[in-house]
Length: 187
Image 1 (cartoon, one colour):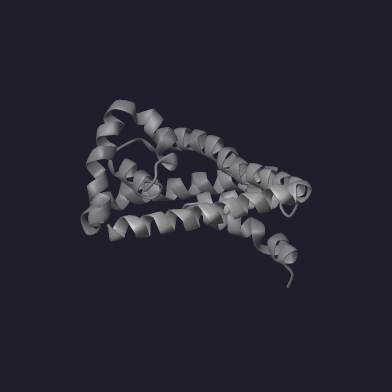
Image 2 (cartoon, one colour; image 1 turned 90 degrees about the horizontal axis):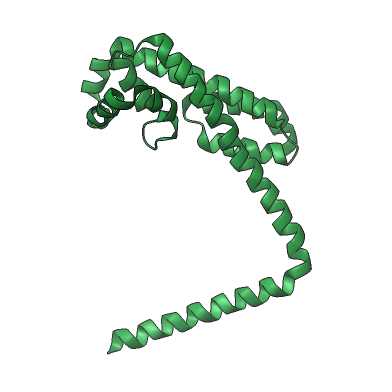
């Protein structure tokens, strides 16, 4: 099966399942595929929004029902409880919106928030706001990367000699640096 046929057949499912869990990498790749014309960017964004909101809600509800047991069972999760709770006390709405952008808290964050006693409706509302920001932003990064790569490789054809000279300069500089380090190490 050809690459484009695979993307057309399974691309949207991959976006949905990937964004249901974590999603950044798959969403960036989907944005890139949308720029290439294999996927529809509005559909990718809509699926990422739905799956991201639903995934976080599932983890939130898991935290609401099994939070203390999960936190006690996983030490890495327990280590994140106090910092997240401290932030929640001060900036509850903002943390719910921003938790999906915080590295290492994409899954743990909603679980901890669920265990903290935040009302379901409040979480859903601010979580959906965060997903509405996240989906086009992260997907857009992939789309813009595709646009930049296309422009770079199209323009590179006209400036091949510059690329060759730059590559030669890098190799020459690296070689000179290695020789300098060897001489310095011998002293």
